[in-house]
Length: 294
Image (cartoon, rainbow, N blue to C red; front, side, top):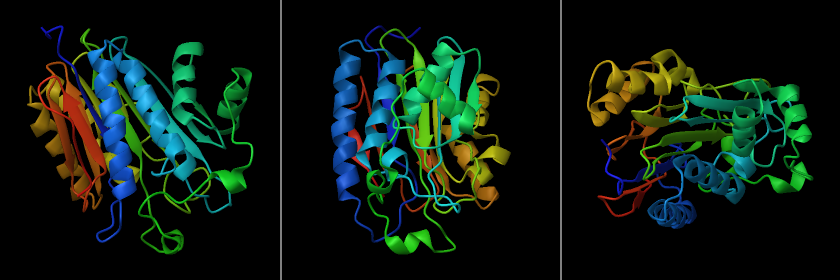
């Protein structure tokens, strides 16, 4: 039984970290955001609201490969993916390959709360967003920007920049939630989807654990993604750290890189990655806020 004073959260700004690059702006932003999450959870905020607001802040900052920090696909326009899951209700929502939605995670939550569906894609997702009054980017050419640590050369290299943002949280009521958002791989094929918009691949939350994954979806999806970590906890009775490490090991076995953040119903936090680093933050009723990049 979770203590009524227990809370925990974790954030990631993507595991696409290049050695030698300057990520100080993202690290400062991540710490400020983590402190805000801590204050709100201490005040009794719901886990679902915490992950929504945290991801929205990362989407609008332009410091990460999501929202404003997204780059065009090979057809010359930005496509956005996001998903969210309310563990207490086992409900989820997502949008995929949607153009110029200002806050993709808010759109994913609207799909969860205001539709009979779990996922909406492309033009259908855009039509849904307009119907529900969600904001679109008015001037795409001036709105999007390269995120922290990314340079122009990354847009044309074979090892193209990629990234994701995400948040997981446990609130005082014992409710768990997870949210993930991305602009995908720079220069990706139009219509390409990774794990981020797929409930159970990039995002998973239930009554036991909340998980968000970051980086190469082509490796995370075959590895089972967020659902694999959740199933290791639920059916395999693995400790949270062991479950997350197991998923990362499977991703690495498929020549994939990336990271995973997770919290469980006891307030434990796990963060693991097999890339050179991951922009990250964590905090709980047991441990003070911690941030890092490498």
